[in-house]
Length: 524
Image 1 (cartoon, rainbow, N blue to C red):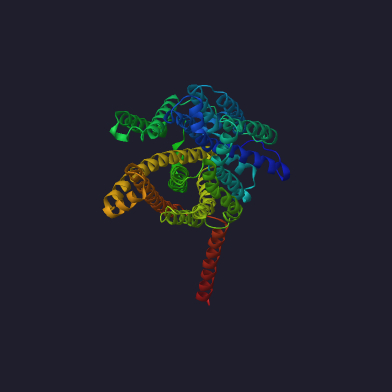
Image 2 (cartoon, rainbow, N blue to C red):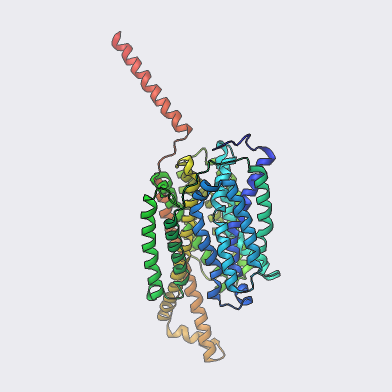
């Protein structure tokens, strides 16, 4: 690192931290807020709902490509300059998205916005750690983790409100003022922070392979459900392309002298174990966020806004608990905190697995709040463990890789859980039809005004119960996934903090004292 002059403190430090956190928040919010607007966008632009999902997929593809490239971009352009460019481009592409009058134009704009948004998450994370003193590193990670969890929690509420009260283009326009303000303040306050630039040659082959396998994977995940997965030639082709290009990418990047993605960060056991834990736990966490709004809106009679108010409890409880966890992370073994947090999230998911169709608002909100309480215990220590186990010059690459794999884990989880949920609903429906007796069917038909109405009433009751049973099944599987993720963290090496060093020195002193005493006895 080059000249950084006097470190930030007081109001300047607070504003800089707030701007970096806001940048991460708007990048995460942008992913979730667009999901709610899809029906409005599809209707306004004359597209089907299936075509409308490309608005989300295109952003995910763009983001997934640039997130792991963050380390390479920083080495070439510098962290502050890259942050400003990404922030400004994010705002400009948001304007382009809002002004789109065709689906093709909107999808193209979303790809560009994904390119800009990708580096914002790892950059905001590493810059927060950089501007805070080392002893307050836990607090810095806590701020970043809070904004990461608030995005998915408040995205549905914000998106639903803007679409209901205004127009879908406001979903994108809200990013513009935040982008301008963040870019301006960060440039004023942090331009003194410079990096040692390394203009390595562009790894064209590695970049091409990365784009091919990420795009193929995302398209496969997005289209798999509609095309009946591997029953489709298209999905089988995409799978083969993804697998081959991914394997070639790993081989090429490992042996390339100047790789576009530094895979050698995985040689650190603490980093690798933390990444596996993050990926497994985030996949389970994201699965709950996918299923719950769909279940509430499609089968429990909730509006999009009301469903958002249920899920936002995860953000509220996470915000309350995060400051406490941020203080604990520098004093307590991070593995213990992660284990507690992820197990708590698993316990909350298992509680949800015994729900009935009569469940009320608070019986849904309380387990979601429990997940929010566990989230900071998971996010903050794993981030500290991951980034604390790599060399200083590898931090940006490690942060990019961590955010990239978390994003991929979420995408895979969303696709797998929605397909599994749909298939389980069909299976449960068939099982319920088989076990219903003639007496039950006759009683329902007697309550109807006509035979057709009786069959419709019967099908509605069976479907509602089948959905509830399938949802309970998914929650049980998700709970088991959390338990597995919590167990993995114990494979990480024990953090060597100050206390452990003191104990080490004390043991050494004790041995020397005993040796001296035995020597004195022998001479006497």
